[in-house]
Figure (cartoon, rainbow, N blue to C red):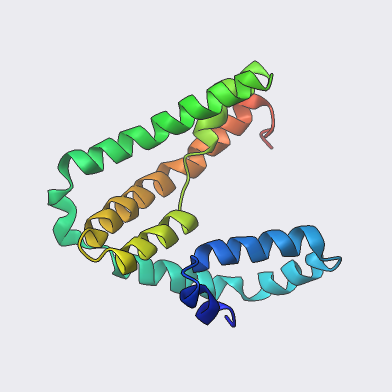
Length: 163
């Protein structure tokens, strides 16, 4: 991407730049549907490459050392999402079914979490492998059960109807 050298010299996260570019394209461009239709044609090889490279950086030798940190992250993340989404939905008067199920729908994680773990690997080589292992192993767990739990949450709220 042409903006990569600028992000590095200004010490701005390339991940953040990509998110901003996507938001600007979706909200400011009159041709955003055309842009996304074209991108859809080529995205699968990029996803495959991204996840293969991410998996290759999973340090299996550090898994036994995760201990409390890994367990704490694995439990605190869904609890934080459930509590935060419940309190937010309640504050803004969302229907009761949404208040009770939004946390389940927020469990899947992958792209941004992996991208951020890669950033930690680059910027903090002392703790990067440990943090990356926590994130990547939790991605495996949450991506294994998360989509199913999202479907359950959508059915409970009445947003998804069985076919």
